[in-house]
Image (cartoon, rainbow, N blue to C red; front, side, top):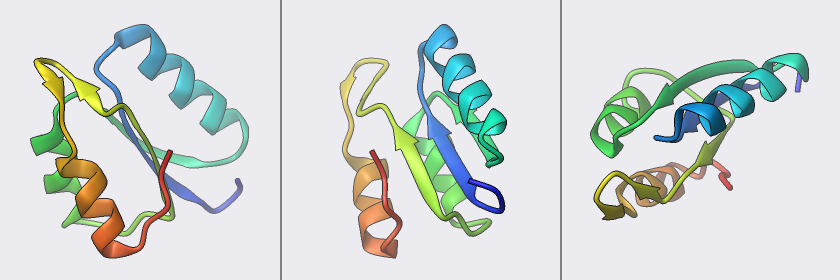
Length: 78
């Protein structure tokens, strides 16, 4: 993943730190983690990304706001 900028959106501390660590070890430039859809969407408008790792269930329940913003920009995510 050398040269890839990957956005991480996860509200569970342990999952977020593990995901960031794995991606960094694979060579990615990790942006985040962000724990709210508002923070993540704000960051999407500020800089380019190649991909994202996204937890749909943030805080109070499912939020498709970030997934929709990523899809609109053609950024792959899982």
